[in-house]
Length: 328
Image 1 (cartoon, rainbow, N blue to C red):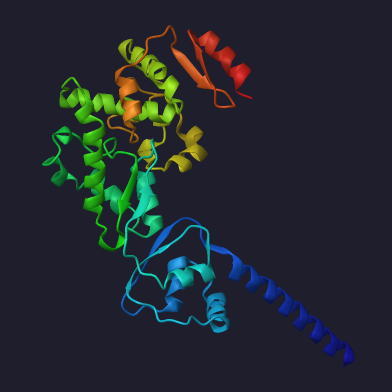
Image 2 (image 1 turned 180 degrees about the vertical axis):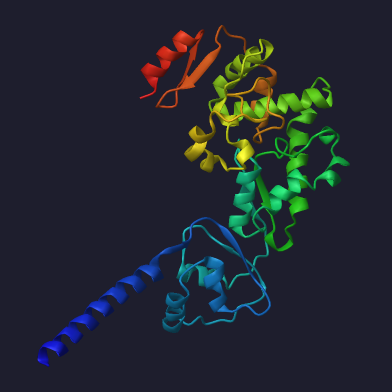
């Protein structure tokens, strides 16, 4: 009997130690990694946060028992800062949004990257942005002549930092700002007038250059190589085009690009001649102008070494030698 009681005591000690460690880790852990918008709706309470934050419901109930909030939740939208613990999240729910916040879309992001950013922040439902800019964008064509014959807004959604007010946020309003930015920073700077077809081809090629080369000083040379390949009916051979038809974000593509490298479709420039049928990302003005004013060179090939440095080659033998030398 004494042995049994001893085992029971040991079990309870182990259980409470385990519980304490679990609870302590839970209460101190980061529950919001990137800046996020939380909307409190009619009927929501503090317990509703477990679904919004995607955290353990039972541990959260215990947390609220030990740390009861000293205020009532108000129906509104709230900005939760990046790297916020549970306690920080609850504190920030005392301050409803009443001013603009900034959101940044990086050069070379595609519509899937942008959709993920907006949905993670809580501004839209997942795929809402994708649907809008690939199927339901006709209303924007009335305001922006450069969209006359496009099949998607991909390529024209200017990458930049935007001020938005989450309380009055609309998807149409954000997209309009991005298109207006493209018009101001790209279209208005052109000295030559391009046809719709010429414009689209420039943006498609620029969208590839943006993802292929990050160094501003090398973009014109890379563009020149790709243009020369087009003129001579070579395949562009740009890995950046491989993932696009699979609707992947830039990060997702890095993990699976080798899986699709030999696939035949209207985007994969490793298996087709000419340009993809639409842009594959949203390029900056810097990249677009570097593409328009491309630099002539004797090269037909390029690759990036393990350290990110670009290496050019005139022929395939030289290119293969570069692979052996720089891809380690």
